[in-house]
Amino acid sequence: MVNKNLKKIIFIAIVIVALIAIFDIIALNSGVFGSPEDYTQGNYTDGWWTVFFQYNILVIAMISIIYYFCISKDISESISVFILSVGLWFGGLTDVFYFWMQFEKVPETLPWLMNSPFISRVSTLLGETTVTSTTLFTSVIISGVLLFLLSKFLVEKF
Image (cartoon, rainbow, N blue to C red):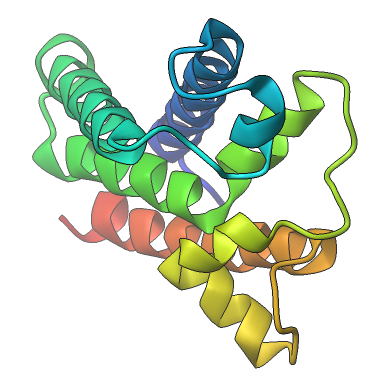
């Protein structure tokens, strides 16, 4: 059985990942990082990834710290919020949300995601030469299961 705190951690991490997708959509529509067409195809303005990555890591860290001080006072739960959020982000859940929140289906191929170490590894293991919608969804499922087990271990054992 999943304990109540783990359910809360999972919920918070999914909300954080959804926020990252919203930030991504805002960046898409801002025009600062390239045209929407180029942006959606992974052709960003130089420096985009550094800004986006640093901003989101900072937000995830701040939420994890707030979780510790205002909700749990349990370091293992706060670490789980951080790890689960980053892991789901890099596992591809943000990419799925990015398209769904715009009422679009996930494209059949997503070659720019070959730059993602985890997602590209899943694609390669499945015999694909590029990321497909199938490998993206598979990556989300695999990362979700692994991260759930890790978070469950952290919350229950520490």
